[in-house]
Amino acid sequence: MAKYLLIVESPGKVKTISSFLGPDYKVMASIGHIRLLEKTGKYNLGVDVDANFETHYINDPGKRDVIKKLKAEAKEAELVYLASDADLEGESIAWHLEQVLKVPKKKLVRITFNEITAKAIKDALTKGRDIDAKKVDAQETRRILDRIIGFRLSNLMLSKLGAKSAGRVQSSALRILAEREEEIQKFVSKEYFEIYLPFTKARKNYKAQYKVKIKLNLIISAQYKAEEHPKEKLQNTGMAL
Image 1 (tube, helix red, strand yellow):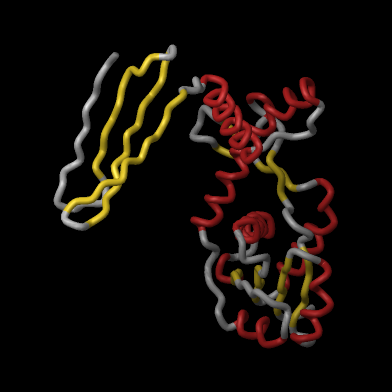
Image 2: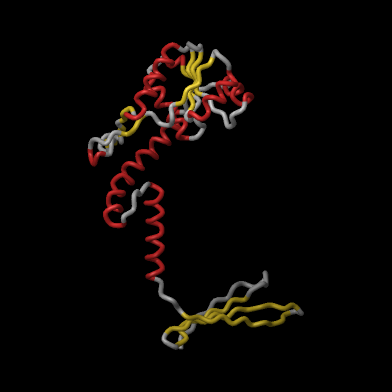
Protein backbone atom coordinates (compact mmCIF):
# COMPACT_ATOMS: atom_id res chain seq x y z
CA MET A 1 0.00 0.00 0.00
CA ALA A 2 1.18 3.53 -0.81
CA LYS A 3 1.69 5.97 2.07
CA TYR A 4 -0.45 8.69 0.52
CA LEU A 5 -3.70 8.62 -1.42
CA LEU A 6 -4.49 11.45 -3.84
CA ILE A 7 -8.01 11.57 -5.25
CA VAL A 8 -8.84 13.56 -8.38
CA GLU A 9 -12.12 13.84 -10.29
CA SER A 10 -11.11 12.64 -13.73
CA PRO A 11 -9.54 9.23 -14.42
CA GLY A 12 -7.78 10.86 -17.36
CA LYS A 13 -5.47 12.66 -14.90
CA VAL A 14 -4.43 9.61 -12.91
CA LYS A 15 -1.60 8.29 -15.07
CA THR A 16 0.06 11.67 -15.63
CA ILE A 17 -0.08 12.74 -11.98
CA SER A 18 1.19 9.32 -10.85
CA SER A 19 4.26 9.77 -13.03
CA PHE A 20 5.09 13.01 -11.18
CA LEU A 21 4.79 11.66 -7.64
CA GLY A 22 6.43 8.26 -7.51
CA PRO A 23 5.61 5.06 -5.58
CA ASP A 24 4.72 6.70 -2.26
CA TYR A 25 1.53 8.08 -3.80
CA LYS A 26 -1.53 6.24 -5.02
CA VAL A 27 -3.58 8.39 -7.42
CA MET A 28 -7.24 7.47 -7.92
CA ALA A 29 -10.32 9.14 -9.42
CA SER A 30 -13.78 9.63 -7.96
CA ILE A 31 -15.13 10.05 -11.51
CA GLY A 32 -17.11 13.13 -10.51
CA HIS A 33 -19.72 13.14 -7.76
CA ILE A 34 -20.09 9.99 -5.68
CA ARG A 35 -23.35 10.94 -3.94
CA LEU A 36 -26.77 11.91 -5.28
CA LEU A 37 -29.81 13.63 -3.84
CA GLU A 38 -32.43 11.03 -3.06
CA LYS A 39 -35.75 11.10 -4.89
CA THR A 40 -37.78 10.83 -1.70
CA GLY A 41 -40.02 13.02 0.44
CA LYS A 42 -42.31 15.78 -0.76
CA TYR A 43 -42.49 15.80 -4.58
CA ASN A 44 -39.56 13.31 -4.54
CA LEU A 45 -37.18 16.24 -4.11
CA GLY A 46 -34.78 14.71 -1.61
CA VAL A 47 -34.94 18.12 0.06
CA ASP A 48 -37.10 18.75 3.10
CA VAL A 49 -38.58 22.15 2.28
CA ASP A 50 -40.39 22.19 5.64
CA ALA A 51 -37.25 21.56 7.71
CA ASN A 52 -34.79 24.29 6.68
CA PHE A 53 -34.17 22.61 3.31
CA GLU A 54 -32.41 19.62 4.81
CA THR A 55 -30.88 17.43 2.11
CA HIS A 56 -30.92 13.64 1.89
CA TYR A 57 -28.09 12.01 -0.04
CA ILE A 58 -27.37 8.46 -1.15
CA ASN A 59 -24.21 6.95 -2.56
CA ASP A 60 -24.37 6.80 -6.34
CA PRO A 61 -25.28 3.16 -7.17
CA GLY A 62 -23.18 3.39 -10.30
CA LYS A 63 -20.10 4.27 -8.24
CA ARG A 64 -20.34 1.33 -5.84
CA ASP A 65 -17.04 -0.24 -6.95
CA VAL A 66 -15.29 3.14 -7.07
CA ILE A 67 -16.38 3.94 -3.50
CA LYS A 68 -15.32 0.51 -2.28
CA LYS A 69 -11.81 0.88 -3.70
CA LEU A 70 -11.43 4.46 -2.44
CA LYS A 71 -12.47 3.41 1.07
CA ALA A 72 -9.96 0.54 1.13
CA GLU A 73 -7.07 2.76 0.03
CA ALA A 74 -8.08 5.64 2.32
CA LYS A 75 -8.20 3.34 5.34
CA GLU A 76 -4.56 2.32 4.90
CA ALA A 77 -3.09 5.64 3.77
CA GLU A 78 -1.32 7.98 6.17
CA LEU A 79 -2.79 11.02 4.42
CA VAL A 80 -5.62 11.42 1.92
CA TYR A 81 -5.31 14.36 -0.46
CA LEU A 82 -8.65 15.49 -1.86
CA ALA A 83 -7.60 17.00 -5.18
CA SER A 84 -10.91 17.55 -6.94
CA ASP A 85 -11.25 20.68 -9.08
CA ALA A 86 -10.94 24.18 -7.61
CA ASP A 87 -14.50 25.27 -8.50
CA LEU A 88 -17.68 24.91 -6.40
CA GLU A 89 -18.40 21.45 -7.80
CA GLY A 90 -14.90 20.32 -6.90
CA GLU A 91 -15.21 21.63 -3.35
CA SER A 92 -18.52 19.80 -3.02
CA ILE A 93 -17.02 16.56 -4.34
CA ALA A 94 -14.22 16.86 -1.75
CA TRP A 95 -16.81 17.29 1.01
CA HIS A 96 -18.84 14.29 -0.15
CA LEU A 97 -15.66 12.22 -0.27
CA GLU A 98 -14.99 13.24 3.32
CA GLN A 99 -18.49 12.07 4.31
CA VAL A 100 -18.23 8.75 2.50
CA LEU A 101 -14.64 7.72 3.21
CA LYS A 102 -15.15 8.10 6.97
CA VAL A 103 -11.46 8.49 7.82
CA PRO A 104 -10.18 10.71 10.67
CA LYS A 105 -10.30 14.39 9.69
CA LYS A 106 -6.62 14.79 10.56
CA LYS A 107 -5.82 12.46 7.68
CA LEU A 108 -7.67 14.59 5.11
CA VAL A 109 -5.97 17.40 3.20
CA ARG A 110 -7.69 19.52 0.57
CA ILE A 111 -5.46 20.63 -2.32
CA THR A 112 -6.12 22.29 -5.68
CA PHE A 113 -4.08 23.00 -8.80
CA ASN A 114 -4.82 24.70 -12.11
CA GLU A 115 -2.50 22.79 -14.39
CA ILE A 116 -1.24 19.23 -14.69
CA THR A 117 2.51 19.76 -14.36
CA ALA A 118 5.00 18.31 -11.92
CA LYS A 119 5.67 21.74 -10.41
CA ALA A 120 1.97 22.58 -9.95
CA ILE A 121 1.19 19.23 -8.32
CA LYS A 122 4.17 19.34 -5.96
CA ASP A 123 3.45 22.96 -5.01
CA ALA A 124 -0.17 22.03 -4.24
CA LEU A 125 0.98 19.28 -1.87
CA THR A 126 2.74 21.92 0.25
CA LYS A 127 -0.36 24.16 0.42
CA GLY A 128 -2.94 21.86 1.91
CA ARG A 129 -6.00 23.33 3.62
CA ASP A 130 -9.38 22.42 5.05
CA ILE A 131 -12.46 22.05 2.89
CA ASP A 132 -14.08 25.46 2.31
CA ALA A 133 -17.52 25.16 3.94
CA LYS A 134 -18.79 28.34 2.28
CA LYS A 135 -18.10 26.95 -1.19
CA VAL A 136 -19.76 23.68 -0.23
CA ASP A 137 -22.84 25.55 1.00
CA ALA A 138 -22.94 27.62 -2.20
CA GLN A 139 -22.86 24.52 -4.38
CA GLU A 140 -25.44 22.74 -2.26
CA THR A 141 -27.76 25.76 -2.48
CA ARG A 142 -27.43 25.67 -6.26
CA ARG A 143 -28.14 21.95 -6.26
CA ILE A 144 -31.23 22.42 -4.06
CA LEU A 145 -32.55 25.13 -6.41
CA ASP A 146 -32.01 22.81 -9.35
CA ARG A 147 -34.05 20.14 -7.63
CA ILE A 148 -36.86 22.37 -6.30
CA ILE A 149 -37.30 24.43 -9.46
CA GLY A 150 -35.98 22.34 -12.30
CA PHE A 151 -37.08 18.89 -11.10
CA ARG A 152 -40.76 19.81 -10.91
CA LEU A 153 -40.85 22.23 -13.81
CA SER A 154 -39.09 19.81 -16.17
CA ASN A 155 -42.05 17.42 -16.09
CA LEU A 156 -44.42 20.26 -16.98
CA MET A 157 -42.22 21.46 -19.83
CA LEU A 158 -41.86 17.93 -21.13
CA SER A 159 -45.63 17.46 -21.25
CA LYS A 160 -46.38 20.88 -22.77
CA LEU A 161 -43.39 21.69 -24.96
CA GLY A 162 -41.48 18.45 -25.37
CA ALA A 163 -38.45 20.06 -23.67
CA LYS A 164 -36.27 17.71 -21.69
CA SER A 165 -35.31 19.88 -18.74
CA ALA A 166 -35.76 23.21 -16.97
CA GLY A 167 -33.21 24.31 -14.39
CA ARG A 168 -32.58 27.38 -12.29
CA VAL A 169 -30.97 29.22 -15.21
CA GLN A 170 -33.51 28.38 -17.91
CA SER A 171 -36.42 29.13 -15.56
CA SER A 172 -35.08 32.54 -14.58
CA ALA A 173 -34.21 33.44 -18.17
CA LEU A 174 -37.67 32.37 -19.35
CA ARG A 175 -39.32 34.62 -16.77
CA ILE A 176 -37.21 37.61 -17.83
CA LEU A 177 -38.17 37.00 -21.46
CA ALA A 178 -41.86 36.61 -20.58
CA GLU A 179 -41.93 39.83 -18.54
CA ARG A 180 -40.13 41.72 -21.29
CA GLU A 181 -42.60 40.43 -23.88
CA GLU A 182 -45.48 41.61 -21.69
CA GLU A 183 -43.95 45.10 -21.58
CA ILE A 184 -43.63 45.10 -25.37
CA GLN A 185 -47.25 44.00 -25.84
CA LYS A 186 -48.52 46.71 -23.46
CA PHE A 187 -46.47 49.48 -25.05
CA VAL A 188 -48.53 52.23 -26.69
CA SER A 189 -46.67 54.20 -29.33
CA LYS A 190 -46.98 58.00 -29.37
CA GLU A 191 -46.06 60.31 -32.20
CA TYR A 192 -43.81 63.27 -31.39
CA PHE A 193 -41.61 65.79 -33.17
CA GLU A 194 -38.36 67.44 -32.12
CA ILE A 195 -37.51 70.92 -33.41
CA TYR A 196 -34.08 72.41 -32.79
CA LEU A 197 -33.78 76.22 -32.88
CA PRO A 198 -30.33 77.80 -33.33
CA PHE A 199 -29.73 81.30 -31.96
CA THR A 200 -26.87 83.56 -31.02
CA LYS A 201 -26.21 85.42 -27.78
CA ALA A 202 -23.10 87.48 -27.04
CA ARG A 203 -21.52 86.15 -30.23
CA LYS A 204 -21.97 82.58 -29.03
CA ASN A 205 -24.13 80.03 -30.79
CA TYR A 206 -26.67 78.01 -28.81
CA LYS A 207 -29.29 75.44 -29.60
CA ALA A 208 -32.78 75.10 -28.12
CA GLN A 209 -35.05 72.11 -28.38
CA TYR A 210 -38.79 72.37 -28.93
CA LYS A 211 -40.49 69.02 -28.37
CA VAL A 212 -44.12 68.50 -29.37
CA LYS A 213 -46.24 65.42 -28.59
CA ILE A 214 -49.21 64.62 -30.82
CA LYS A 215 -52.42 62.83 -29.84
CA LEU A 216 -55.57 62.63 -31.96
CA ASN A 217 -54.02 65.16 -34.35
CA LEU A 218 -53.94 67.83 -31.61
CA ILE A 219 -50.92 69.33 -29.94
CA ILE A 220 -51.45 68.54 -26.25
CA SER A 221 -48.14 69.56 -24.76
CA ALA A 222 -44.97 71.33 -25.65
CA GLN A 223 -41.67 71.68 -23.90
CA TYR A 224 -38.94 74.21 -24.42
CA LYS A 225 -35.46 73.66 -23.06
CA ALA A 226 -32.49 75.96 -23.43
CA GLU A 227 -29.32 73.92 -23.74
CA GLU A 228 -25.55 74.29 -23.73
CA HIS A 229 -25.44 77.46 -21.62
CA PRO A 230 -24.18 76.95 -18.05
CA LYS A 231 -25.51 80.32 -16.81
CA GLU A 232 -29.13 79.77 -17.87
CA LYS A 233 -31.60 77.59 -16.00
CA LEU A 234 -33.69 75.06 -17.89
CA GLN A 235 -37.07 76.48 -18.81
CA ASN A 236 -40.12 74.22 -19.07
CA THR A 237 -43.50 75.40 -20.21
CA GLY A 238 -46.67 73.51 -21.12
CA MET A 239 -49.59 74.56 -23.26
CA ALA A 240 -52.81 73.05 -24.62
CA LEU A 241 -54.65 73.84 -27.84
